[in-house]
Image (cartoon, rainbow, N blue to C red; front, side):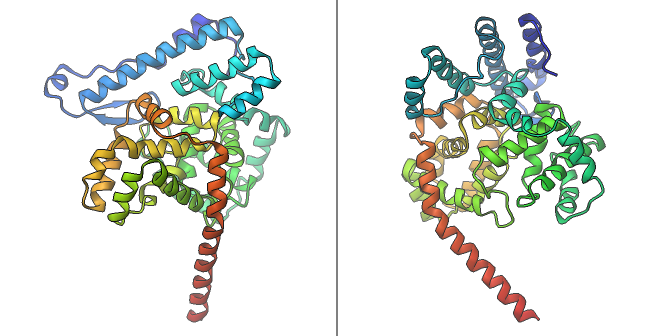
Length: 398
């Protein structure tokens, strides 16, 4: 699907993929709620101001497309397949071991990705930079087809849960919520559940895999993107039975909220609000259930290049953007309403990512790893204690 195309053909394809939204005259005058489809087929509700924001964003996408085409013309189609950097220290090490042109490419690429990968290039760039292409190259070419055939009629607790979740995954979507869409999503999820029996299937992965299918277009590429996400990009054990990795991430996020947004953290603690009430879904679904799809995919652009630290940056940014409103809340319900309303109407990914990387303090992958190591013993002890209580209850019931 990534055949050779001229710069002109790619530009025309991009333009076709990024249409402007034009609400009716009546809607513009009354500023009423309007419904429209986004680039990936999701029905979105918003007012005319939201539509204007989306149109501005789409114009920026077109501009970014022109930048990418110019780079491909001057540097070559795969110019971005250079060593990557995600921090200043990594950049210094890279600079000392590589040609200056490669270092410049890495800096340029990081900035470009934060500004967004053009939709028409997103499948190819994701597949290359995430490590999915490399992972796929280590197995026989027929691996995915053979796996799907081998597990076709098998029934496990994972397959039963997948079948239960299929109709609940983005209901109403014009392709995902069809027999064809359900079948494709089922094959990806069931296939992966047999590839990694420790993960099997965890609710939340259905939304992630569904969005990957919409971007990557083919089941096999979506499968390998899911594999690299769970095996390389995210922290291990996020989706295992006891969700230990997810529990660790939530504790780390609470630590970071105290450090980066102390006023908010103090106020929420006074309200006895547990941030995991909202953040657990953010981290498990990688914002796919919370943010508009076009914004989610901009977050994923950076996630697949810079790693799991991006999730913390974005989660903190959401709180930071609504700091003043959150500080005057008096009830837990008010906090949840503000955060849900904010995420559902975050149509401008540049606004979100600017706060995430410019206004939230710097966080390196190494610093977050230290936070994780600090929290892991407490999480494992808590989960062990919970398991002991469950076992004792089972004994008492006998």
